[in-house]
Length: 356
Image 1 (cartoon, helix red, strand yellow):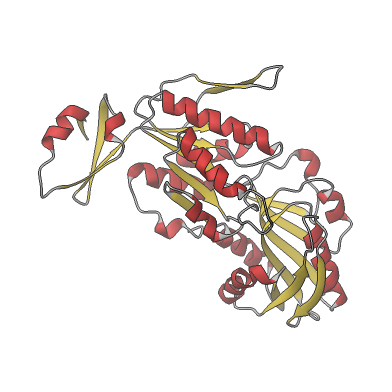
Image 2 (cartoon, rainbow, N blue to C red):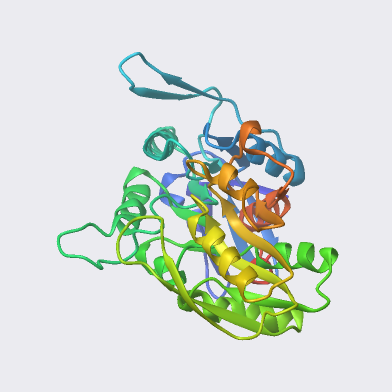
């Protein structure tokens, strides 16, 4: 492995050699230079830190990546102000800050912004916000007068705070990637959930789209699983969590219904879907949702519902009081660990976008 200072590196660049230099203007120290396939890659040492939103996921990611979780102190004062202090040097490091959205959402978002700003002022080489569940992800369009497209606002805030890159998972709509003025890695947990689905058994099953908007995604799942699909006609008249399921397109009678969705919050839509499916003859209902937000009385609703099992990932922290016999949690830690280490090494991650 070669070592060179940034000043030496600047003088040594001569065509036709191709160089990829990451934030060279920030580097005033000795940096590692990796040579791969004739391309010079300049990155700092990998450092992973975590906010308070999902420490168990961050620890699992670090374990899979073979690195220690960074030392960071987060204090909350009596006036609700937050202070972040990194207890180790970040100068020239390739920093990844893991902080998915979680309850309380606004406190977690502010915590992430302060962590990004602190890392920027600590002279980190590159800063990546790892946000498995993106804050305000449902606020992705202006469908009423005089409202905010808050997901776009959050994207702007991350960049302003100091993020050079964002890693997230299963956005409510893929177009949200266009909200970012910095690189955004949009990972999918679909393959992980499909593997769990196949393990459970898919004989005599049908994939069910909970609404027309998710029909394309459900169709892809059905094709990859080699089973038919059905679509529920859901109508929501306002911002409440009480949609009305009016019709079902497709045959579910006597079949195991597999509902795929990006998240489950209050579980209102899921419970309503399960009731409609049962009335139309589905013999068993299993749901696979990436983000288990499970807000309000979602667990109580789940336990009293026709849903046999709900499978979610650990993208959102699920407290012990929310765990029940109907709930199963699969991890996305290995996927994020691979993407982080590949990005740090300058390797392509295209084959990992769908959980590969």
